[in-house]
Image 1: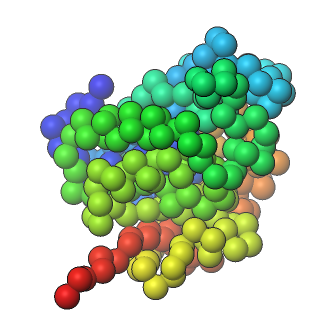
Image 2 (image 1 turned 90 degrees about the horizontal axis):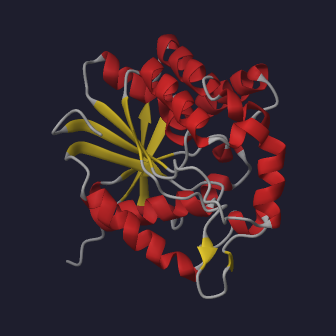
Length: 255
């Protein structure tokens, strides 16, 4: 449930951590200025009972208690609290657990497929997300993941957001995927269609982003080797971008 009829900014997060760890510095800057910010996490429900696949079972076994969505939602509330933002959790399923109704088989049975092309059966998922996005409160800016790294959920969130918000949509760099060689080049195609906006961060904003990222303790072993590894990679990304970058497609005139 949201508490306001309008927001200065709405950040769309595919999973319970993406927005905070990718652009928590700018969120902290916004709320420090008194802006109202809402972080909407799309895939925040418990894994469906019948969502079994070799990959899902392998990861759930490795995660153990960390796979529990209630734990992860509480982590997200703590992280957003550090950043001064509100959070909203949708009950949509992670791509890891979605199934093809025609074949009764997982859409993404391997790690490779989870970071590849969106399955055609996910067209219905995209349509459902578009309808839910249309029901969000109005905002001065809406921001979605760029899709660096190629995770299918990040791709779907951006596609759905583009369908609803069009040329006004801004995209943030998915962390830590954006650190991979050529990750940004692959998604910013053609490059001339995109313009960037750099947001400088002061040390207070950097610390807020780091503390918010560290609040996702259940993900520490999955995304980062240790809190020290998180700190090093986060600061490397900030140095490389000279802050945090947003990307926006330019409008092509027919004239």
